[in-house]
Length: 439
Image 1 (cartoon, rainbow, N blue to C red):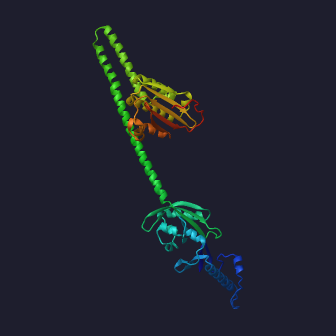
Image 2: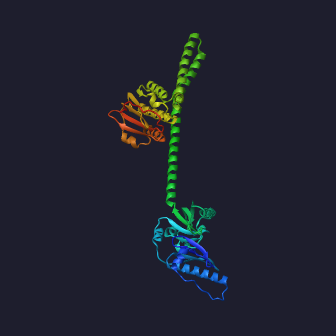
Image 3: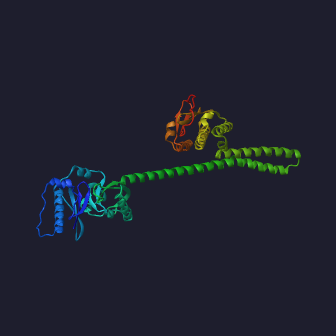
């Protein structure tokens, strides 16, 4: 008959009644008991076995009396059974019971020898019923094989992994199990700490849901922006390029009907002018879709050309101050974003402000690039703009800046409005501008 006992400190010992239970020689010596004598008729080997069993029984009784043992696992005809003992409550056990995390002691094969209150709450079973159960049976069936592997790994070193506890009502509780071997007991007991991951999983699910919602919103904005851009291109092709091509077609018909060489020359000259206008218009539309000069020459040249064309088209003077140090070595993503933001800002000025002049200033600081756009127009309600998501292309400007980790702000002035674009610069391998910042 074998005996396995669980200590109150969460350690378990397994031995045979004919041998030692685990008490040290010093402990046995301190008890100062006298040697036992058996009848002389008993064979010597039998005497040795009986004395050993008696010694084991006495040590077990002393351990029970001192409160060292919480439970006994007894093997019999019905198999192994755990017998819980009542005794003193050491301070460390009170601490384990008060833990916010679950704790349990397992045998080598995974049987629960002890568990604290929190573990019982997590699995939604009485603590008394958990003792003696196989920890594997408390997990989802598909994860039991992985838990067996974890048990084997814990015999050599600390092991941990995520699992799902199955409650009696079928509810799953995500947990993080950490197993380690108790020292001094030759791997006969394992300590297990159970961390509830329910709240963490809920937060992760909420974050994923929020990210998906944000992704859908951005996708909607992107699709909406694409459709708006397509409508704008369609209007421009119809109103400008389409009209020029129609005029070219009419001119060619008139050329067919011309009877005099002088008339043909005049009509040919007129057709050349129309063709040149059509080429310029198609080029303007193409540059609006993507400025190739930005790829070839950088932000400074691209903005200078756009401003010149803008002034010619809208009759609005633009004072652009862009030093080479402000625009050089900027990543392509920042260059195209700033180009589009300024393009949108100038378009808003032309459509809504009634301004005569616009001023654009760049300032390259230690960790960021600031671009200020101010006009002398009628302005608008900056507070309304601060919360607006659809007015004046503001949302598009904000989204482009946000993609770079930057921001766009709007400030009312005595006359007109000021737009300040701030873009952080990750690479700080440059000298900041020493000129005065614009106001």
